[in-house]
Length: 311
Figure 1 (cartoon, rainbow, N blue to C red):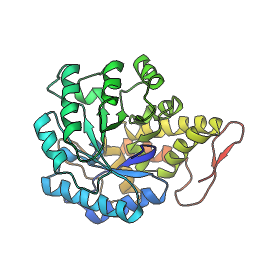
Figure 2: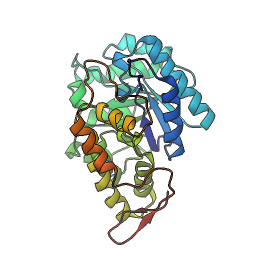
Figure 3: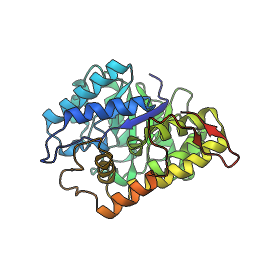
């Protein structure tokens, strides 16, 4: 599998009484693919997997796999925890229709970097599908060195990295300059996605893309093939949108916006998350209103020199 393009980590929609809204999930999956997503991510952090039951997690994967099979699109499934043995067991039971597994750096336990490598070595040896390492230090408490990230890239069956370190720092620049040719970095921190794409990331896993997939798909395409001026301008606008969508804990504002768009039945999240505030929802909708409506076929007038990006 080659990791390139836009992968949208889907929210898990709930009804007003908190039940899984599988029909809405299937509809949303088709919509983001219609609007230019390369593939889907099921059970990423945005999907609230920690508060889903085992049966609900299985249903989410079934729905997303069915859509991806029908649309010939790759599905990445979030699998893994801070337990190596439990992560191996989860990988071994992964739906065979999955193209890859998104596996988080062990959280809470705070192992050494050597322990992180040993963890992923065990997972890579057991997995039936390729692995994408999810590096998100502000959730895991571990910030991995460039050397460790490159060592992970050398492991068999590890094909990529979702990079979400909350910055474009010196380590990120060093990583992007030393990547093996067969290893992909996907921008995973929405506000910094445009900058990481400019440094050479092959694509993105961005939750914000659920609310306006076409714009993020255009951004990824523009940084890969040009025009650069248009990519830069659109990136600035999408960074502002992402900042508004992440003003409160993910995915609360995204769900509120999708509900306001009529695309999911409610903005419900599960405790300990609380629904987005009215102020945050209004602010995000205000930024979103500056973009053309999806499905209109509009050009993207992005560049200061008047360059356009066609949908």
